[in-house]
Image (cartoon, rainbow, N blue to C red; front, top):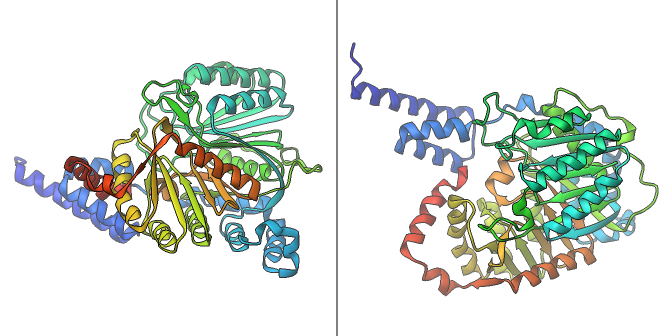
Length: 483
């Protein structure tokens, strides 16, 4: 029987109905995401089906359940002790830095098993050259092991310099493990690691595709940027590995980011996260030997911290929930920097309520796009915030990639998570939550310094934007649940 266009159309419609039913009844998505996919399937049938295969499939929880168990096993001896500390008023003088944020610390402990430590020292980097100079010095001084997780690794001058330094340490007998994301580093050739592997270094890609240079799993990427050296020094923040992060890409210009170098007990939480990520995807499993978790006998500082991981392997939206809790706790001011701003209604409401309650809310975004739809989706949310009294700044010196939140100059967060649905629900992320007034004030001063390189977006500017910009915002806003 000859297949006519009518038959083909009927087949496509039946397939769309089947997919729509799957999304609604089997995958149990949130309503916003469900309607977005149904609209795409029915308005662009063939392309919508392809997009669903790439972007829409949910991750198999069974593949990830062991990660949560491993995390508990690493730290379970101290969980109940800290819960009692946070709930007992007589113990609070020992944790004076948590006076205004005890409930936030308890939330992080309960949902993300994020142990609180207050023996940490922090260096803050806002320039890629400074960050990598410090990192290379620490790599050179490493004695036992170096563990790295990066979302993007480029096969350029910086990437080659890094792998050369790691190869030299592997030749010296230092254990070196390098985990990179396969989508973020899709163009990284296998030969990049040839000498590194021959020297004894170990590398693996996160959710690697079996097809070279093609990976249909766009979602569920490891977006973390962590380095752990000898279990004593840790790095976390926004810088990946590539020349653009040194400000040497002419399309972006200067790269403005925020990264932390941490010494103290918080490093061991980064180590625990690395173990889980590595063991999820590597054929060579890491055992929980004490040599990877050295006892920090000397206090490096007095900064209180929690390292909060989140991703599709966890039950709650840990980082988003912590952000919302911080925002609602603000009494005076909120300073927020993010390259992408695609919030869900709960986060958007928290910011509006804070501003309408008299809190001085300031948000800084990049003035230039690096992802078309995300950029215009971001701008679609700014009108509501401006109407509520939020001050919006657009960074113009280069590209702003920092992911920081400061509340009342008393608590702060720096990490890998953007303020968008992808980071909160789909990617594997990690943020440092810092309970230390001096550090929070330093981050606040950095924000205010960046204002000098920004222009303020006013309500009049926003109202007078071109009609074509409004069209791009509207289309991108409809797609925001799947961006």
